Length: 163
Image (cartoon, rainbow, N blue to C red; front, side):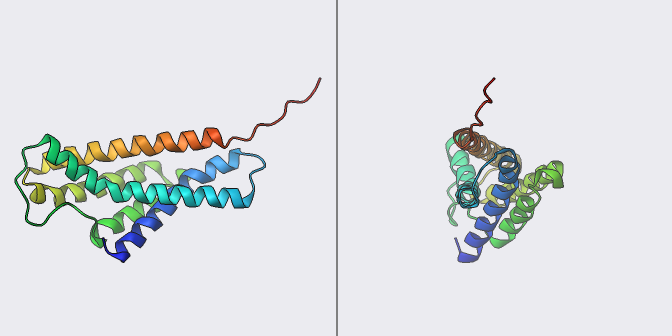
């Protein structure tokens, strides 16, 4: 992976983390700026890692499930052309800016990954799309579970008033 692609993935992770984290911080009372920034940076690293793992997960799933032919080029990796729409989708992840548009862009990014995966794995486009979708859905569910766990662990408890 080139440094440019790594930076794109990290920026996409930061944008995705900010979009998911800002509403959580708004509900928490008494969160320090330092803690909020650290949580958002940790979320950016996690989201960037999930984005980076998406092609590898789709490639691995294709190898495990489908009868693939060996590829000379190797595993599916991010390229700047594939990562740029991902960054746009992450920017649109802010809940108030359009979750439906974000979902459509993520489907477009997945279709781009499937288009790249199909010839590499030696399978049809629909099979590659299925592998990409299952890999993306699995990673999405996993990262959402981590988000909910972190939100639950970082909830500040407000003392109940005495009668």
